[in-house]
Amino acid sequence: MTLSPTSSVSSRALPTLESRLPQRRELLTAIPGPASQELAARRAKAVPASAVSTMPVYAADADGGIIRDVDGNSFIDLGSGIAVTSVGASAPAVAQAVTEQVGHFTHSCFMVTPYEGYIAVAEELARLTPGDHEKRTVLFNSGAEAVENAVKVARLATSRQAVVAFDHAYHGRTNLTMGLTAKTMPYKTNFGPFAPEIYRMPMSYPYREANPEITGEEAARRAIEQMEKQIGAGSIAAILIEPIQGEGGFIVPAEGFLPTLADWARENGVVFIADEVQSGFCRTGAWFASEHEGVVPDLITMAKGIAGGMPLSAVTGRAELLDAVHAGGLGGTYGGNPVACAAALATLHTMEEQDLAGRARGIEELVTPRLRALAEELGGDQGPIGEVRGRGAMLAVELVKPGTTEPDPETTRAVAAACLSQGVLILTCGTYGNVVRLLPPLVIDEQLLSDGLEVLESVLRSHSSTASDLTAPSHVTAPSHVTAAKG
Ligand SMILES: *Cc1c(COP(=O)(O)O)cnc(C)c1O
Image (tube, rainbow, N blue to C red; front, side):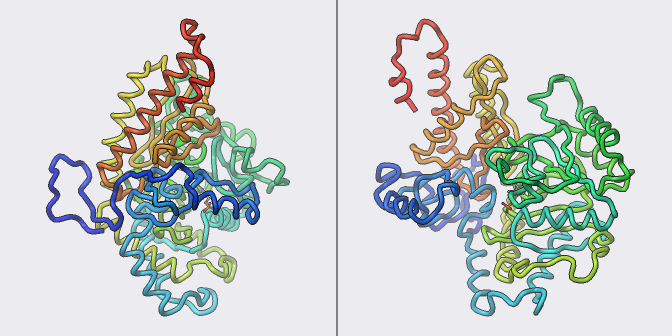
């Protein structure tokens, strides 16, 4: 995709990018269509039910903001495969870099025969991550693996063991990262025992604070006091935190929370690890979400958006921390695979060339006012939208039972399903399962985004009237199957 030289609609906030597939929602069959149903039947006999999918349709092609299924239906992608395909799922520069690399070598193992791509990615990450200190980078395959290795580095470098994680945190599904993740179902239940020396501290979650007046700094002091009382600063190897929490509900901590924690960590010899696996790579309107408050992490974990969909993850951080590890202490067969590195270099180049951080800010400017207006229209404090929040193209709507702050996961599920049936892929998240999250590819066409948003708005309107119909005594005559059919 390149910038179109003649952008005909001057009022557009997002410059038009070229694409291969038409950027248009189009449903040709019932959802799921016959070809998807056939695959579902094969899947049921070959894949365990535990490996679930959001969508009942099977992908055949994807480009820009469109996912086309095996029946030819075109869905608007507001999920990016969970914040991965920020440059699109078939960005030409990425496809070309991958093709070129596989024609030479697909693997040599960086631990056996090293290659330039790995070094070039490390150089780029040193340049792009916050802080101008001396940095080193190690590459892995998944976000969880990056988090595991950041913890290994912090423990070794400090000769301490305790690791602090927060309420609502999500850090992965391996044994150590399950332990670091907050939510038990579906991530942890019956998968224990978990690794020791993990301590959980209260997060800053402005919408759900018992004292709504609490500042970010006060919320950080609350956690710091618990750390000092329960663990002791001298025993803590690392504080691990997502600058904006992902899976836990797109929770943006109150201003001052992150810098206060980072300052305390520095004063106490604690390694501050920012888990930017979801929030990194232009997603929040900056290269990394830590930048919004000028936080410079000691270590930063990255994955998802890094390589245009190819599996790659990284730990970048202070040279003295990473250089402390003994020879051979960090590695892995596939870590920093050459094809994934080629994809990452093309992805980072595309992000700079197309100013995708600026585009993420443009997406926020388009989406947030519309969702806030809808929240007002549906009753403000008394309505079903508890909060609209997020930064850049990492935006969320928290749904509650009208007139309360009680989470409404049922409506959230129904809203996502209704959007899907109208050709819009949206994801949900949250400790309470009541958050609709929007993670469009950063290259999404403005018209397409607007169409997707219209579907979400109309679905939220109809589900909101369903809710008030059910609670208002004057409407109790409506038979339940009628309201159910509205979904
Ligand atoms: C997705 C995610 C992970 C885990 O990444 P995987 O690649 O699925 O292992 C870790 N941390 C955060 C913040 C994430 O969003």
